[in-house]
Image (cartoon, rainbow, N blue to C red):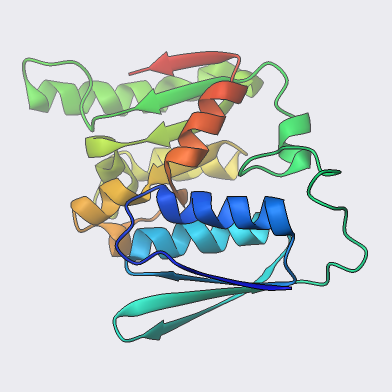
Length: 207
């Protein structure tokens, strides 16, 4: 079975949600999603890979054609598969008691942005003290600026990622600030990832 969905003009997270619904309801061997922005391209292609598809991407007439292909002859039907949203079964199984850090700004607190930037650096530098309980960091809005080249916090975030901490960076936010090409750490994410992460986390720290 082959599925084609035109998602041009749809805001995040609609393209990845349409992709998810098609895969879970029809379990196609081939799927083609057409999107018109970098963030949607990243989110859809990453979601396809988590579902076992080989992904190829072509740019055509100002849009991105994301194609997924896999052998579904031995695969379980969607009804037989466990609901795992954007994350793999192995990732969900290992969640346990995990802490999610939710960042929505590149500064900590309000009143003075220079002070706030320094406090954010100190905060991220201290996150390793959470030990194995630190599971995931999500960055939305202005916080995505922490994940790009030139950020004072970039090296600390890269160290956390190397240590096994999952880092998700909002693709819509990166696109808004024209920073998609400058991201240096983490995976480009969407609201489906964010909502699922909040649901699975046992503790959320908002900073």
